[in-house]
Image 1 (cartoon, rainbow, N blue to C red):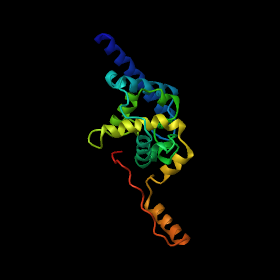
Image 2 (cartoon, one colour):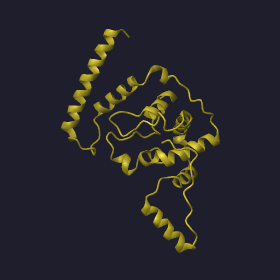
Image 3 (cartoon, rainbow, N blue to C red):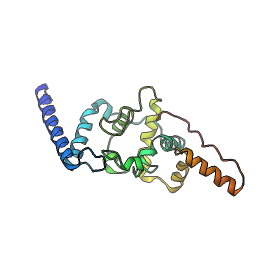
Image 4 (cartoon, rainbow, N blue to C red):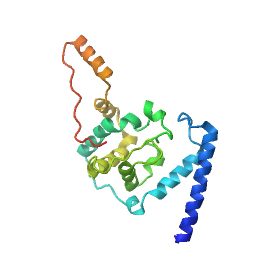
Length: 203
């Protein structure tokens, strides 16, 4: 693409984004409860695609598809990502439902058709003007993020047993922990087990 065409494309995209923003404000003001319009969704996806470097889009997941790596990523996801994305990737959580724009269903085609490199780049760099933060740059190793790419690919086949294990690793509030303690004491007087530690902690 020539420089002139690139500038023209940037101007067109900019105008479209301004139009989408105006339409959004007219549609729902600044409320995060409303759903983005079809135009906003389309434009956001196109801008995200353009923002990811071509070299990054071509990257392949270097992490081996083994049960050990998948479990490591699954428990990491439960501990650090499920608060917004839910254990099953549906994003049906109090945080996920009330973000604007809503996080995508990670099991759906719009996510699964992304390349490994695109998913990795999003995990590492986040997405501006959404609730998705950047997790790269000192918070952990790139291998952790590549393992998460592997797990996201697995989400459509997630089993009930895997979800149940993930629930043990989901962050719990002080109230939840006190309730567990009371239940354990009522049932047998056994001390409450500490939450298992995940192998990595960068998300």
